[in-house]
Image (tube, rainbow, N blue to C red; front, side, top):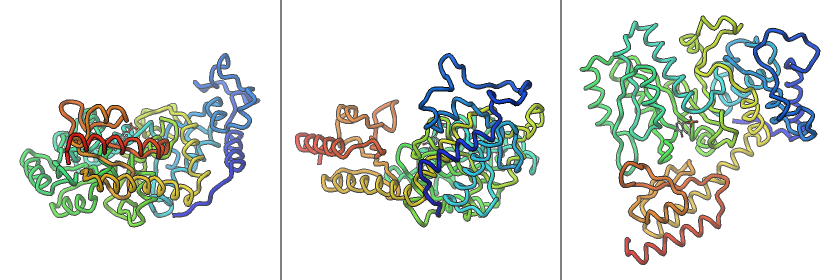
Length: 418
Ligand SMILES: *Cc1c(COP(=O)(O)O)cnc(C)c1O
């Protein structure tokens, strides 16, 4: 993994150059047929002086539309926005090849609105793939995921008419139980399920637990049934590959067919940046031929989307370079490690994956008031919480951590919980 850091001036020059290559609604070209324009000028006036120094804001005001998927061919989907669509193509190439180790030009992708959309996009592709290639009927296709997976899984299954198979996990390690997989697989096949869309979490939101993609892949291979694995790295996609040099979540692993990696979680980009990557050859299963007014056709759940989103992701990756981002993510992990050591000394039970910045603490060690005071998130709001989690994000100050740990120690002492 390597890409060089760019300076602010270089990033700025590149974005403004791309914006220049887009057709400007304010320019001389006779743009008569496009149902889009710049942002309303009563509020978003283009001559605000700060814009000259603000490439992302300038992109917002110019309002390029990145509808469609730009990696499918070198041609632009809407040639009017050719300049910035090229930046999106570069962003996909960089993440697919440098972060997720794909072979050159072997991966397609786009910037979806978020992890929810990217996950649903994957399910949609594979559902249609099984229908087209195997003549599968709707009732024969299941979505397999762990109990700790994000709720976009049942949401997507509901929209797409897939059967849910939710796997049990070990209560302490949060690992998928092979016994549950075997049992639910057997039951599903008896009920007529023949095709499996499998989700592997590159970190669940609640625990930061990482599913064993090879265990899942080996299982379905041994069962000799058609399956495809999508990796939900909405949370972990921009941290885990940088902190774990032996990650199995790369395109060199044949089990990984597609992946979701949100910009708006660890990469600190604006909301609306959920990257979706998939091996070449699969987007065709969701081609909407009826998209007659889009020269390149449409293949995405979202339709029109802001080009500024892709630019924001590209800018952050460029300004840090691979080494800079790695340093930043490793630092978060170091700080997380430090909290874990303190918890161990206090005798507090917790779960943590060593390559991630999430700590889930067993709820019996603290009062609801303490959890509430520090905005810790509970694993469930339906009944009594079993876990509270800390997420060591870049805004978390050491002083806040110290204060929390002191209060926790105080509670433990008075309540004699340990
Ligand atoms: C946040 C998250 C999602 C959903 O992403 P949105 O961007 O909120 O749509 C899906 N999966 C995981 C693991 C997440 O952390």
